[in-house]
Length: 286
Image (cartoon, rainbow, N blue to C red):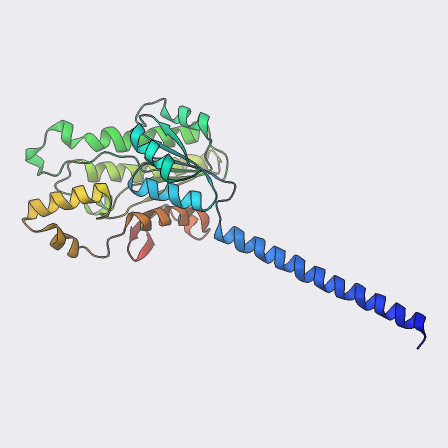
């Protein structure tokens, strides 16, 4: 074999080796990109959390920031928001009363969401029906339902971009009742109805917006859950520890926050509209 032939053979082999290496590198890069997209499914997304300074809302904020989303936390109390901004790097905050009719336009002027999570709500009473005033009984209708109504309406009338998702955090009380919480269970049921009504309008108008509701039972680790645990333990005449022990797989705030993002990022979950969240995971409500 001549030198020329050997040189030609070497060049061809070198070209082939480089080509194979390039293919491997491109394959690795594509696989890496797919892995990153899977690990960080919220990259490039705008996430707005109404009630984002505590409980489930704060957990959603933390998880979304961790997934490289741009996040706006909205709440009424400025001090809580300032603390949140100090503790969660990168989060944007906005203090306002989300029950006001103008609240959605003010929020959307700051950040137009791809994902809107509504967790804001009032602490319900913890007393038997006959011991409540109408003001106590109706507090969750005046706060939880009003916020869900205003923001769902705004999502439809603005409208939010096609492909956007609105998640209303309801409660397991909407399905099972809550006898010492006044109008809380009914208000939370109404939030589920609002999600369903809004979805029907999105479909009818071909807006491409998804509306969903999560209905977690009592979360003993949250401020609202602790409030409810204390109320029910007192009502039943048992210790708070015994009441919690009687609960069947209660979720944590972190469980519910993870579920909220799961229904957004997993296409099989997007087919459902209402989900119960427990310590065991997500379950679609027929």
